[in-house]
Length: 121
Image (tube, rainbow, N blue to C red; front, side):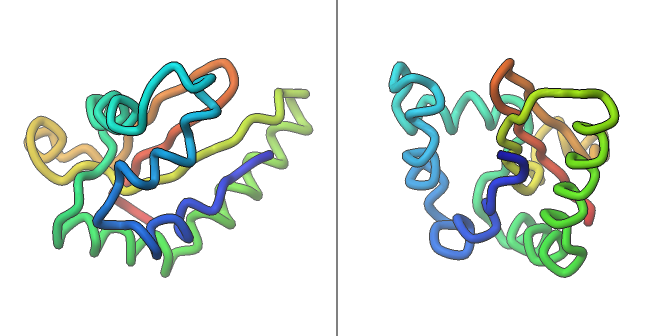
C-alpha cells in the first residue's frame, strides 16, 4: 500500500473534504459515514478548507512530501518488517489549538491505516 495519492484527491476536492472521505468509508468497514470520518480526523488535526491550508497544501506538493514519505516508509518497513498499511497525508488544521501551539504536524494511527497532518513540507 504505502502512501496514498491524497494530493490528487485534494486537487479535485480540496474544498470538499467530506467528499474526499467518501473514498475512506470502506476502510472503516462502512460503519462510519464520510462526515463522521472527517469530523473524527479534524479532532486530530486534519485541515478545514481555507486560504492558509491551501497554501500549506501547495508547500507540501512543492516539497514532494508524498514521494519522500513513501521512500521513508519503504525503507523502514523493510528494516523493521512492518505491516503494509495505507498512509494518508493531508494539511494540518490552521486554526484553534493547533495554531496557538504552533504545531507543524499531527497524526492518527489505526492498526490498518495511518493519517498524517502536516504544515511543513
